[in-house]
Length: 256
Image (cartoon, rainbow, N blue to C red):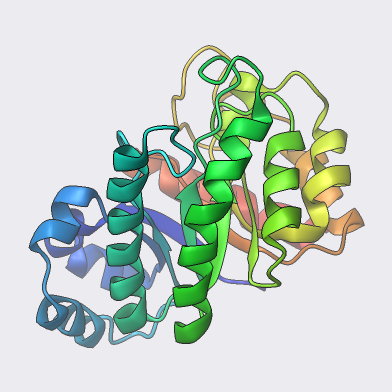
């Protein structure tokens, strides 16, 4: 069975290291901008040594206030700087995937995907030049996306085999205006990672699988139908919800 990662912010690694080691979790480590401003290469090397059970790792890039497709070139420049720093961390931690927010919001751009796309491609070409050198795959995640079209256009125009998609189930449930099947039709072939958490469609609750309204049986059926073998990441925020979600995912993978 594929490893199932558990999402954890970098600062909590110190506090929960013994629990994480005891349960031998595979990990998605979130590194905020504040963390990347403080962490040194020696800190990351120390973290690597502490992960003595050799977990599978993915990284989540900073996203607050950032916009890789910003019209303002200074905002885009700061975003590119933050992205370069997470890739510096990736060069040490050697993750399977680094997940980024792509930043498209129909309301912010008044539906002008072309404006966002033109600026985004500049950012992602820079990201991918570095990612390819260090041998890491990059996935852009759906957040406010109402349909898969903007992300599909971005992935296809960047056109790198190591640049793909992270399907966030919670964000899908909040914002989509099209079916789950449509998302897989457009982006299933580019799927590198999935973020698994539940909600009732009104808030980004990050609940355990089964506590909200997402049809995970359908979701895993579509994964199977598209022969997708992504990195599976639990993004439930409560410890009890993590354990419930791990059992649920294992059951869904066994059934598939």
